[in-house]
Image (tube, rainbow, N blue to C red):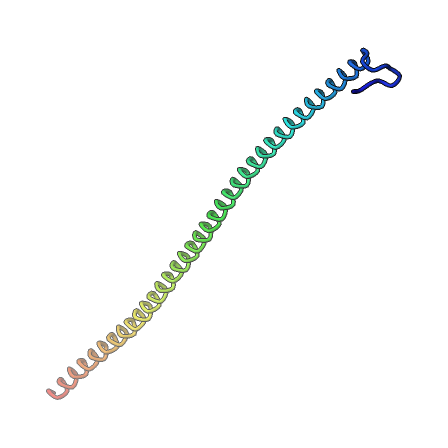
Amino acid sequence: MLTAVGLTPGGSSTVHIYTQTIHITTQLATRTTQLTTRTTQLTTRTTQINDKNNTFNDKNNTINDNNNTINKNNTINNNTINNNTINKNNTINKNNTINNKNNTINNKNKTINKNNTTNNMNNTINNNNNTINNKNNTN
């Protein structure tokens, strides 16, 4: 049995001390419940924050994946452009080679034509000479 110092047992003081003890015990239980509730709320909030962080990380990963895909596509496009440029240059080079060969043929044809002209002139001279010879022989 609890008694206040300087008071006799069984009096109203004992009841008062008992009542205070019950009151303090009740407050302690209430505070413990409040603390438990706060701890649960904190755990819930922490879980929510972690979930949001995970979502954020997932979105960042998606963005990174998309950026990697864009970079790969840019590389493919650049390679295609480079290959197309190389192919166009190759075509230009082939056309230049063809043009050079055609120019060579044209130059040879010009030479042949000059030779033909020279031959024709020579034939005309020969014909004229033959005509002169024939006239000389006739006289």
